[in-house]
Length: 160
Length: 160
DNA sequence: TACATAATGTAATAATATAACATTACATTA
DNA sequence: TAATGTAATGTTATATTATTACATTATGTA
Image (cartoon, rainbow over all chains, first blue to last red):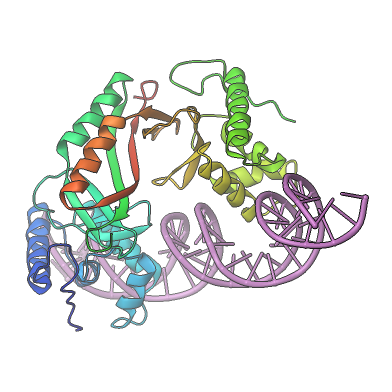
């Protein structure tokens, strides 16, 4: 299995090997707790999504996954992604039709995603107060909130 | 040319014929001011987008547009939409890959879009303070903002 | 073991969007 | 007003993203 390290992945330089190890451990725990099955395919797709902090497309994932499983089809990837999104391990970036791993899946969180249009790294920041404000706005017109997407595009510190 | 009226389009019942007339007048003015050309195609696509307050997909627009111009192609629609988005007359809803007309294109605005998952009506609310909060969050990690997408899904008052 | 359910395999296709290049319309000014 | 440059549109093809439908296999539980 290919070694997946990207030391410059985040603005805060970090040991990405460790980052991934923790994410995967966390994933095991989350699935265990929920009685969800982190199968080999799902686990591998999660690894691939988390192999960098850049948003990655489903077909890019497919290409990577096919290096190990040549008969994989698009639906293989989409099914794994659906599962991972359901359990909160992966987020879809709607404005890119691409995906990122969630680094704080264990905690309940309400996040804003910041996407660097240059390097494509995505940063997830917790923004509970922002969520509250938006929900309040909705309340004024009797809108019942279900899910909120907040995506900020721009340039990260390294790329500005 | 078909008459385009949808009296129940918005939560606040309104005279949609008037709503459209005003939007189109506003569009003329905006394009005039910017030296942009609101051609027949662009104008018609805008009318179609604004014919209801429901998010509409590019290929739905294509079908409608083809009732008058049978030789229209997808790119016809996408080009018109690109133009209309550029001048601020139309917004793309990223989480739906669909489009809505902007009702406040003349004013500078920073909006949150509320999308009813039942009736598909979309409401655009001005949310400058929310934008500020998100920009402030970005600032803390030296993120230079470029564009912000905020989309709240849920149920509108009529559908809850 | 038998069963029910969840996960995966496989093929086909739907839905969304863009690239590339030719042609036409429009605005400017020589 | 003819020439010219730019913007808009026409046309064909194709890229990208995502889902449906149905068959098969694996897994957990009675």
